[in-house]
Length: 247
Image (cartoon, rainbow, N blue to C red; front, side, top):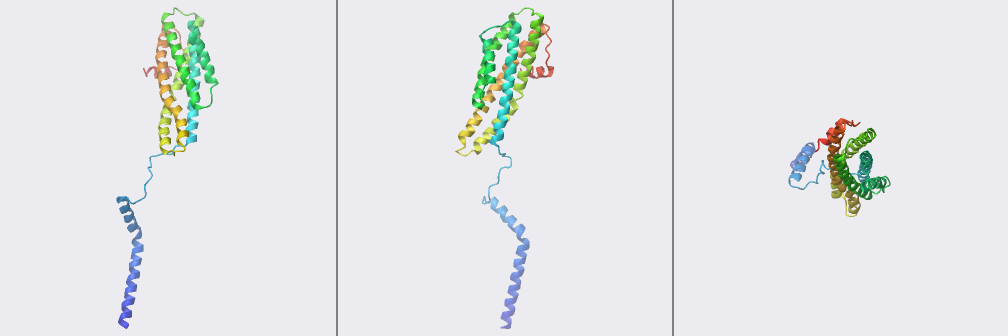
C-alpha cells in the first residue's frame, strides 16, 4: 500500500512538472504551430499591406477640384483665343462659338458627367478656332501697335490656360488608378454609383492631354509669329519652355 501511494505521489509530481514546462515553452510552441498552420495554408489570410482604401467622398472631392481647374483653364484658353482673333481681325462663326462655349462652361451643371461633356464640346470649338488663327497668322501683314498689345495679352492668357490644364494631368492619372481600386472593392449594390463617379475621370484622362497637346502645337505658331512681329509676350518663359518641350 505504501509503495502504491509513493508511486501515485511521484506520478503526480511528474505531471505537474510537465505542465509547468509546457506553459514555459508555450509561446515558442504556439508560434511554431502558427507557422506550421501558415505553411499548410490553414492560417487566416493576411491583408495586403500595399492595398490602400480609397474613400469615395475624398475621390469625389478631388474630382470636383480637377474639374474646377480644367474649367478655369478652358476659360482662360478661350479668352486668349478671342483676344488673338481680335488682334488678327478674325471674325468667323468660330469666334462666335468661342463666346458661346465660354458661357456654357461658366453656367455648366455641377454634375461631373455633364460638366465633362461641356468641356469636351468647348475643345472642339477651340480646335476649329486654332485652325483659323494659324491661317490668319500665316497671311497677316504687320500688325498695328494696338493689335500687338492685344496679341501679347492673348498669348500670355493662352500660355497660362494650357499650363494650368497640364498641371491637372498627374492628378487625373492618380484618380484613374484610385477608380480601379474603387471598382474592385465595391459590392454589387455600389457598382452603379462607382461607375457613374469614375466615368468622368476616364473621359478627362483622354480629353485633357489631347487638349494640352493641341494647345502646345498652336503655341509654337504663336511664338514664331510674335517673334516675327517683334511682340514681347508678358509670360513666364519657364512655362513656355515647359509646354513647347512636349512637342
